[in-house]
Amino acid sequence: MKGAIHENSHFVEERAVELGAYILQTNATVRVAAKKFGVSKSTVHKDVSERLKYVNPQLYREVKSVLEVNKAQRHIRGGMATKLKYKGKAE
Image (cartoon, rainbow, N blue to C red; front, top):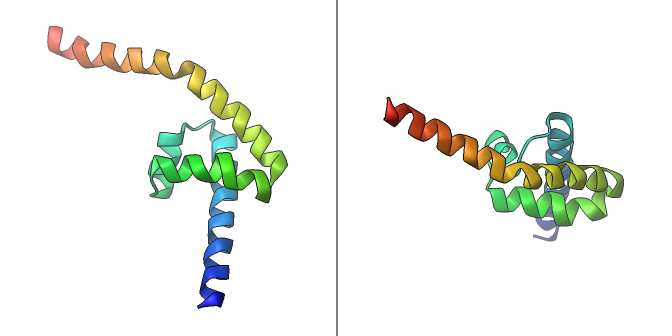
């Protein structure tokens, strides 16, 4: 059983690095990354904001800056989505 735990933690660390690299390369949001990797938004957030810090601190800092930009723009994307939603209904 002990070996399975070690293998699982290695998988989680790899996933954190892969998620971080994907977000950095594509400027993806947490939601987009979650959909791409087939995991929940909570998992993506935990991987890149907690686990990645210990696995790859440099990547963590770079991903953190991308996520801060995405968070700052979130209200704009939400407004655009709402505009598009109701634009179709008004016509």
